[in-house]
Length: 291
Length: 129
Image (cartoon, rainbow over all chains, first blue to last red; front, side):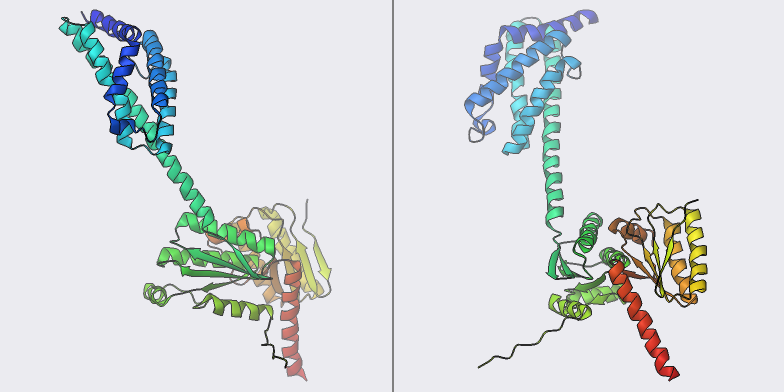
């Protein structure tokens, strides 16, 4: 008994796909309501060719392997689904719209299965079940790829942000400044530290000013990161000055009991710059205006 | 066996480390350097580690030991040209080399030595006369 149901399972779906390919395609597209179709993001003809290609691949895969989505015969289907999903994630489709795109195939297939197995309740049930499983697996896979594309985008943006946010500027021959904007975490500190030290070597600078005006809060972790950077710079033979300490941050530092005694700290970047110039032995005189 | 050369430049000693330091080499350097300081009466030691790319806690401790020993022998130690990666490693290891003076390159290191030796001579000179 069970062998019969298995054989019907693996035979019927490809038959239906082969027989009613066009009908299923038009039903599928019909099924996608206007909101899912998003004609503002994808052209009608593109959508049609995507669907047609998927059905064609699905037909080949089911003919070889039945409704087992994990089978190697479905590689092409997965590939095509992944491509569609990725492009949709980049085009700005909503997750639900992408899911609906796949799930809309279900009613289109069901209609054909129903007409084909008219009167045979048992095979109808078996066929519906295997088709449901297959379409669900396709939908889940699509969503996985969709999610992954989104995550990749986020990760890439994070990396870009990390690089963007650590410019080392040269203020004077031998004086570097590093304005830090935003919260310092371990990963960022690592980048900050590396780019500062690298810049010290390249520009042969004796003094580096770390400006923390743009750092919203300083806790023990951030302070420790700062101290590490200062120590590393000192080991290389450069002096570090921390500037832009706001009153609230000064209070927090003292309340937390962080020891910044070994580090020169200044309230403003201007004050730090003056100290740096002094260390280099540079002095300025206001030019007297000649009459 | 390979050996790290110690060069005499006026009243300073110049040590350039151009090979990977291993523990035995570091111990040998410590021996040779202290002997050289006491033999030559050098006033300053300049250690150039610009080609040193790998450090561990032992080498870090050795550097600060050498500085401390030189100070006992009345010679100032300056470590110059530390690579960023080495500096980061030492800091992560918790070795901030508190007693060691540092400079960006040999030029700057010589300046530091000359200044500190000059300053101490001035001080003693004014006391003697």
